[in-house]
Image (cartoon, rainbow, N blue to C red):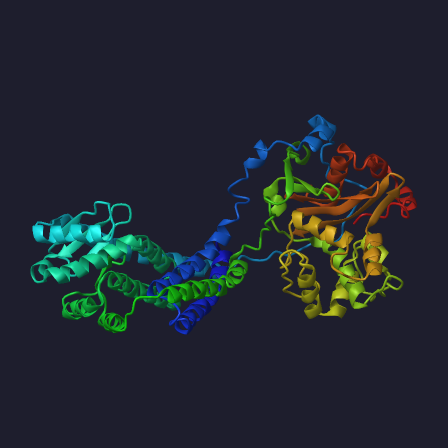
Length: 623
């Protein structure tokens, strides 16, 4: 919620700009838009005000549907391959053949500023709700004191107005002592309330004009607009631009109703209608009830309405057509702000996979994960199909840890810092606790041993400006690389979800980045773990550790089998098993069960260090 508040405030900057654009558009298109169209433009504005919340509400995980995975049916192909639950080995935290040294050691503190702003915002909403509630109670008291209209003359006049406007619904009409302006209130059960002093002191013609005006509010569903406007006023209580826009919307509504009434009258009656407003300008006060629509308004509004009445001419077919085209143009212009609002409002802690257009099946691997939380994602490129375990965690963005070294290597190759033929970086002599790090490294050795300083050196030479550009160019995760070159991918600002890890691997495999094929091939070779006649395995692990506790373990990569790629990403969170080693062991078990990879892991677990070294050419150390 605190993070949303920061994003919401950023959205308000765009909303303020939108208000200015809309006001300018109305002025530029004033001669091409009818009064009704000018009022209806504001509904586009109300729609834009809802965008930040619609975007935020698109995120159900992991709170709303955390139970859903338990009831998902496994996909047929994977369910058959898995067989009995006991076929998959229990997850062991001590996979001896695999180690990952790229460990995170810091944690980002929650946003105190966001929390404070959120509390202020909620307090303001509560205060505005109290004010609106008080206004509702006042109006409710007036309604209780109102009596059904007794004047038969006004009753007959009222029914003539209903008939004239082709309104068949029976809308009750009341007389009220404590009301200063005629109003219509209620959306589902609308009623009209006339002040007693206006009934007794007005001519039949003047009362007719008032009734026609109120019935125009009913015909155009202005009661619903009132509710929407008040909701916007409560939520955006702190934004003066929104208040200005809502005030202009209300003014345009009254002018639009005037125009609708005038369209029903003969030209010689225009002056009488205008005189009615002038005569009652002092008697008809500003409507104090924000959820009711009436003929009243401020003196400035009354003056503007009288001027519009004096200049009124019925809209021709040409003007109506121009109005429609101009309205569509303005709508198109305003819709251009939707992506900006969506981007600012979206919770970048999650990634949205378009489930409607993707071939996705949800599988149950809870017995394999045991007490560990996490997710598994498998993508079959040939079938263009996804299999996902625990979609909430599969969509949650977290620290990539050492898995991001794949893309640091790619950026270093593309920038020329290293090359496929010359990737050596000299050790600076600074001692590291991992002995194998204390020597010169090539891309292959650095990737095999997950040598932090090697990849940090690439980013240092490139500079953070180039790093951020590369991340945006490739579309990696949340595309946030705030911080220094040594930390942004180690439990800092850069986050990615398991689903995105798979999508990034697809881009790498098919070189959808448009990079040098030689550089793509060099990165692929650096993460090649095993090759045989049955296929090849490529992958990279990553472990995130905070204050000495493992919090996340990654294993991502792909299998090439019979010339076809299968991309995967496994993530384990919380507990001692949240390491890259355990994620890799679990992945091998799952891949073996679905007959994508049948290598016996126990061979490597039981091997001595010397024996493991002998496999270095065909099975480099996974780190």
